[in-house]
Image 1 (cartoon, rainbow, N blue to C red):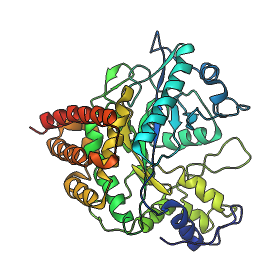
Image 2 (image 1 turned 90 degrees about the horizontal axis):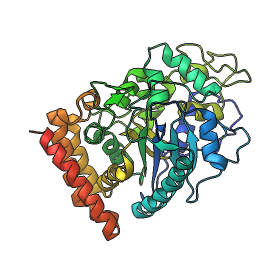
Image 3 (image 1 turned 60 degrees about the vertical axis):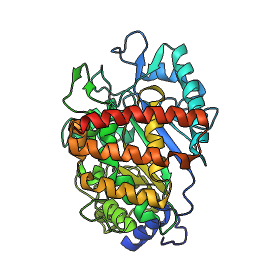
Image 4 (image 1 turned 90 degrees about the vertical axis):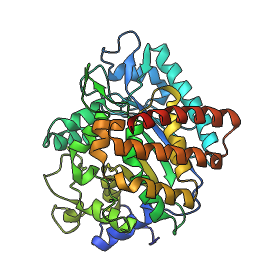
Length: 411
């Protein structure tokens, strides 16, 4: 991995080379792949009437000191008991982001406890967490508005309504895994991408939105695919499987149009079509800083995003405790280099079928076959995670149920 001295975050970038060095330094931090984290997002509903809108003030009252500052300016934004931070997304979706743990078992224990705490806070307020990747009852509706969210909405509106659906109605499950040692990064990067379409199909939960069937297995992913390919398309491609991850991500980031242009005004909407690369070469009145580059990276939403670790973003929210199943699958598939190679070989023939996975899920036979093979591979690798017996047995039963569904789809 390329490294460089720390750049002053307020110093203007002198040119593209400064940006390249900074991206390489912060986005692919290498080392033994030992830590795992999750980010869990849910739509939030009135427990008695799930169609009823839930406003910002009701969320603030329910979350109390755990409220993020986006819904309560003076909140201490206290972490949950086991360290997870709470955020509220533009449509009122609630998200908890865990601290990374050195074992999947420790992560599951801590996350279960933090979910229980959030669930109790909401229950007292007559609220409950959703169980799918998109709001099945309500149409898109803004709940939280900030300069960032306003700019996002304005930019996404240029391409149609999908941006509002994504911002206000969708809920995802993100699994965060270490990038690995320098000689492992490329293979782990490829595996995280390649297994995406079959795992999206296997764990799709977002087929109903705003009171109707959508015709998609994952209407959540359909919304993401329709927003802006320059910031949502996969960085890795089976057509260029050996492309250097750092170089590919750097090119992607510099070529992506600006989504937000921060200043002292209330409106952060950027001029159309200006990329970060353009900004570096003088397209805007002031030059960008390292801090501007970091912020720009936070506005890119590919299916796998490097953030020092690999943030895997293509999974729908899962019902109840089922979030543990795709976590276990991904952790098992990336548990050792040999399994990583097998996962890539298994998934590469369908690694570009993102649209088919979102539309048809396991109704697409090639995806169903690949998903079945990957679940078999994950089950074989599951002992590598060293789960306690009860969690191992529960996970095995859950994955066998999913495996039966994939096998039905592959016929």
